[in-house]
Length: 364
Image 1 (cartoon, one colour):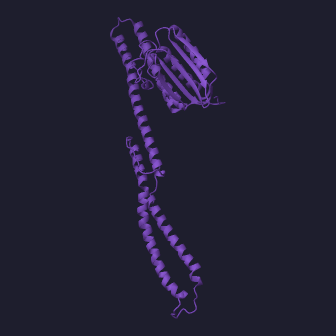
Image 2 (tube, one colour):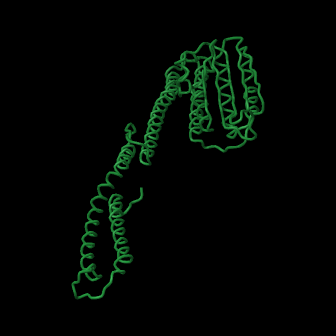
Image 3 (cartoon, one colour):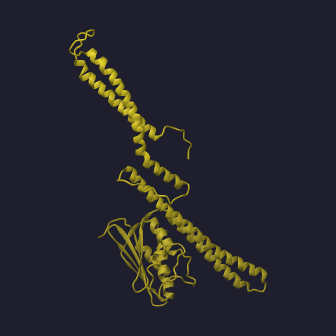
């Protein structure tokens, strides 16, 4: 923060403003009295005390009393202004204290300013919401960092063990060790690339352009069709041209993750995956639906958490993934100002609905 020279407090400024306003009001009243009253009083004889009042007498009596009243106004303005300013600025002091605590890393504190709605309470409510979001974001980042460290440590530990075996056991089959090292290294690379992609989506650092979700869905399905055929799963893509704005690369990765998850976490044979795009009036809608096992209701909300695969969706084959598929999808959707909804199907499987802001002519 830049160094600032000390200056008068806001409370002192408001106090001086109140006192100055009272003093100015009193001066205006004196001028009004002089202009509209005293100037019309006759001033025939300034040295004689007559029965009827004259301007000389009124000036001698009025101005000392007016000066005393002005002094009282100044004192009342300073004291009353100081008290009133303190009461008015008390909510701002609480807000500043909460912000100061947050700057020191304490995000659990809330202002919870009581009373009816006004500008200070609106500001306090906004700060409370911001603190809640920051606390949740920091907790999520810490949890993500811990999980990422754990996930990255596993392939590195396996690589070290394999290298130790190769060094201490000359008779061990080197081709097998090389193959296992290659698989472990590939998994570590996939995890690192997924982490980078997740970070990119959360930062929103990408160029936005007009895209057609139906074309991206067809491209993702074409890429994953061999995997679907290998597992005996029907892959169907339907829908109309659906326009939105965003990164074609990130949206393709989002759709690829969704379709791959739908294929991998499906029935062993005879399952189905349906991808459908719809153009609504204010949103572009994408739905990916797959058959599969029945998912517990309490498991579904955790599927978008990093490294939270869930017991019903965990696989041990070559398509087990790194536990970031739906987390990346959620991050990309959020970066595109969209909404992601996961709904378990009653007869098994999952329905994923993505709503993105539409561009172009709306449809009913």
